Amino acid sequence: MTALTQAPSLAERARADFPILNQRVGDQPLLYLDNAATSQKPLAVIHALRDYYEQTNANVHRGAHTLSARATEAYEGARDKIAQFVKATSRNEIVFTRNASEAINLVANSWGLSHLQAGDEIILSVMEHHSNLVPWQMVAQKTGAVLKHVPLNADESFDLDAYRQLLSNKTKLVAVVHVSNTLGCLNPATEIIELAHQYGAKVLLDACQSVPHMAVDVQALDCDWLVASGHKMCGPTGVGFLYGKLALLESMPPFLGGGEMIQDVFLDRFTTAELPHKFEAGTPAIGEAIALGAAIDYLNQLGLDAIHAYEAELTRHLFARLGAIPGLRIYGPAPHADGTGRAALAAFNVEGLNASDLATLLDHEGVAIRTGHHCTQPLHRLLGVTGSARASLYFYNTLAEIDRFAAALQETIEFFQSALA
Image 1 (cartoon, rainbow, N blue to C red):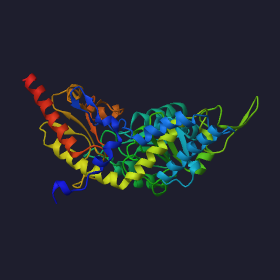
Image 2 (image 1 turned 30 degrees about the vertical axis):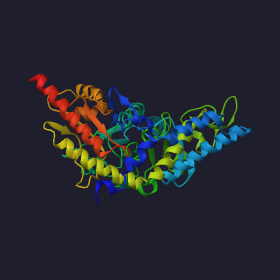
Image 3 (image 1 turned 180 degrees about the vertical axis):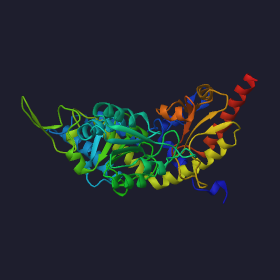
Image 4 (image 1 turned 45 degrees about the horizontal axis):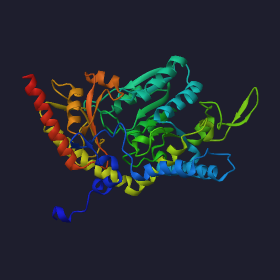
């Protein structure tokens, strides 16, 4: 089969939906490889957000007029879409938040402060994002709970055997990332959750880097909570969600007080609203939630299995190209031969060179990558570096873009090396 008769790739079919990708940076076409930080937005999402403010703008719930009813229907419809997307048993198991960080803080302050006591143990991992470290550190300081951390295997993946050794009857919570935003590893969530439940511990799964890229089924995983951010899955900023098992959410006290989360208010007391509104104090991000629903429609149209398969192809090619560059060190385990087993991202350093300097010169070539600690400072300290460069891909990236990135990176490295010689 010749190239002329091959079916277009997923990226080739999707790129027309992302107008931002058509711009130039200086005199070079934009090459966007910072998707782990935030994804770009398709026209369907942009239009959904615009249409809300142009045609529907009104506050949700309790409004008797047409615009409020229309806004409420679209807002609650987005909740239904999320529930179906992650296979929740009930729409009431989905709570809208500003982002995944707020979702974790909700669980930490509601369930954590009301259930954890001195001597109870919280198991995290050394690869956690700051959003899944700091809230539990704050809870531990207030309750006297003890933090424990799962180390890495020799290939810089989650050490499941060490995790087994950390578990005990004192373990009350396990909070781990599904896919690391730095190491790229796909953690064994099913085994992690099953083992924790054998000790009666609850499990929170940070799914920010998995939900946008692969099918995630909360019932099959049996996690107690799951968090995700809309802006990493083609949705707008300012909205994310918390999934929680219904009985668990019902047992948790409210996190924030104010309008919407109440049933009745008196001068000296109040009663809470039913789920999920008990955890949604104040006017929510209505337009953003509706647009997140449009993003889910878009991802469903492409198909999560198709996205995951195509990204495996991208991963295989990315590692082949970067692996051919001398002195370049990629963190985390290598992908399987077919490109599966890890995310389509590579955090790396080049011996003797500063990652930020590399990114600055690459930006002059139109290449957008991220540098720094990626909100995983403890992990970088463990790796013996202060930061790293990171290229992260999504379904609208192409094999040709990987080739362009690798060539630009090789030229940049050679420029620095010649200047330092």
